[in-house]
Length: 160
Image (cartoon, rainbow, N blue to C red; front, side, top):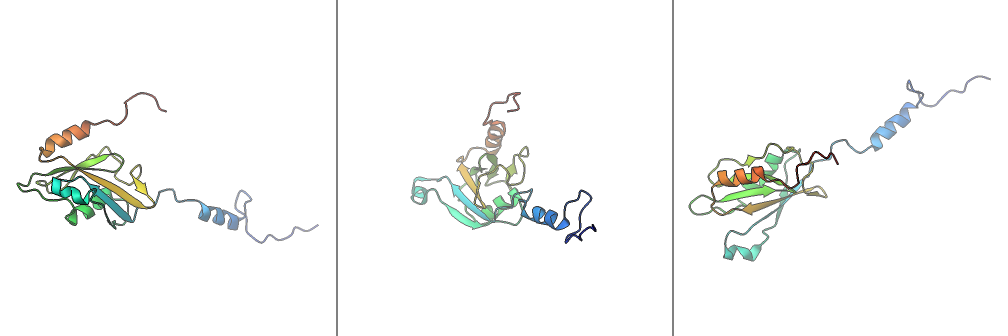
């Protein structure tokens, strides 16, 4: 009996090429897509500032997964109040502390032990959620050192 012709070509493993393409197309991407929105909240800086607490704003985020670029988008809007004397200190977090922002510094100082992408951050339905904590006019170097040493989990040898 002669062999019937196949509709689809087979790969080396005998799997029809068309079904392999369909399987590949149905798989979720290996890297999660980057948030396209940013939701920010911040602490109040004075009693009169409490009226609008938690100071929630939403805005478009930058393309890609550049965490510093996302924070820069928020900072460029003037979202963080400037303090007379020019010495306001803030930290930014999203499920973990990300860095320190000081009014007198030209740019935030990030904690580089972190993955600079959005993985493991507070992301809900494509929105990166950031919170800015106010550390009054404490020296930013002190706030940075304290937060750099902060551990949210016990350091153990357990791999579980």
